[in-house]
Image 1: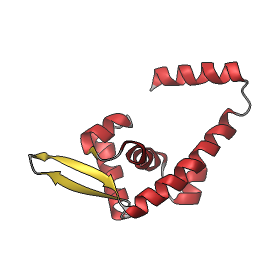
Image 2: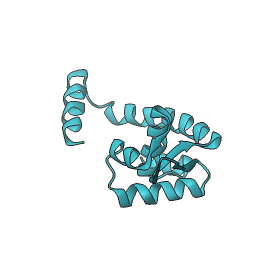
Image 3: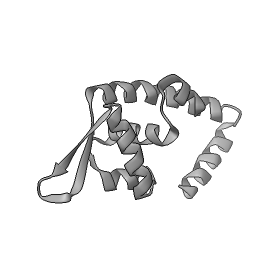
Length: 114
């Protein structure tokens, strides 16, 4: 994942949030944190940094002022699309030493941890 930082200036947590918004569309801050398995303090910091880079934008929910909605900006969509493809290649290289059955087992065990 260091390659993502080198190529796109994204930490793994920023990458996860950016790609999850790309895949899932607009989310509340709370829901995005749950989807990427980050505690509220961590997701808040990630969002703040992505917002500073103008990759996401947030709006307040008019029906509930405690809820913040997040969506990608055009720059965020562009970066997420490219970074996502790069992330798939990194994952392929990581799994390359494993045979098909080993990959299945590894991913299954990994899914239990997440």
